Image (tube, rainbow, N blue to C red; front, side, top):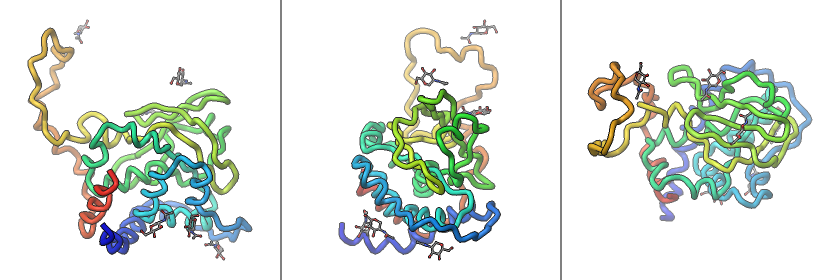
Length: 247
Ligand SMILES: *[C@@H]1O[C@H](CO)[C@@H](O)[C@H](O)[C@H]1NC(C)=O
Ligand SMILES: *[C@@H]1O[C@H](CO)[C@@H](O)[C@H](O)[C@H]1NC(C)=O
Ligand SMILES: *[C@@H]1O[C@H](CO)[C@@H](O)[C@H](O)[C@H]1NC(C)=O
Ligand SMILES: *[C@@H]1O[C@H](CO)[C@@H](O)[C@H](O)[C@H]1NC(C)=O
Ligand SMILES: *[C@@H]1O[C@H](CO)[C@@H](O)[C@H](O)[C@H]1NC(C)=O
Ligand SMILES: *[C@@H]1O[C@H](CO)[C@@H](O)[C@H](O)[C@H]1NC(C)=O
């Protein structure tokens, strides 16, 4: 297992590429803010219940990219940190079903390239873009609704709420969520085909799609929009390898 350390170099490249797809969209104004260096690992470590997320940020190098970007961005950043429990509560195999680039995108989905206070989130216009958003692959947005003491987050696939605040101070906000934010863009209908298309058991009773005229023979429509092509095939297998050791 020690040999997995060798794979970090390609990971850095991948994370940098993925992050840069978003960074380039920002007006890169390098106004040198007086903000001291931010270390996201340190912030999360103080929370005491984010070991899995810290580890994921670390092995994908997304964490260090955040440290750099938050220092140079005028917009700041917002991160939604799932607790260790949140990862434990995922259905077994959930992460391993993702392709390597989807796994990285899942992490990027928990980061928005803009600072939002809780108040900001109450009045923000939905959907809010995340770092997983790209030109070719959909919005990867989060929706926020709620009242001052309860802000709900919806991904289109899971709904949860901000359960705590680790940091709320520009340029970085870090909020705690009790569920892993699984993007609707990945997990919603037709987006992620199950590993084994379970043979629909002829369940008793009427299935509710008896009306649906559009529903053709099911498995044929997964060719879709080709949104999984990132042209980042190199080295991605290694990411999978790393992730497999985790879960
Ligand atoms: C933050 O940015 C400033 C100026 O842009 C730079 O001088 C400084 O080294 C950066 N700090 C870190 C920790 O990257
Ligand atoms: C950030 O904090 C972690 C844990 O406290 C530490 O291991 C790491 O070296 C720090 N990174 C930087 C760039 O200071
Ligand atoms: C990050 O990964 C490196 C290399 O695997 C490891 O040495 C370091 O301890 C990790 N840091 C954290 C905070 O997990
Ligand atoms: C937030 O979610 C809770 C349950 O999870 C629900 O009762 C409440 O109505 C939701 N609030 C808004 C504004 O969506
Ligand atoms: C998010 O909000 C937008 C605008 O209100 C809406 O069109 C979209 O369906 C919502 N998505 C989810 C996943 O709730
Ligand atoms: C089927 O369609 C009818 C009328 O369009 C509707 O009343 C009924 O609820 C639908 N049934 C299902 C299972 O969707």
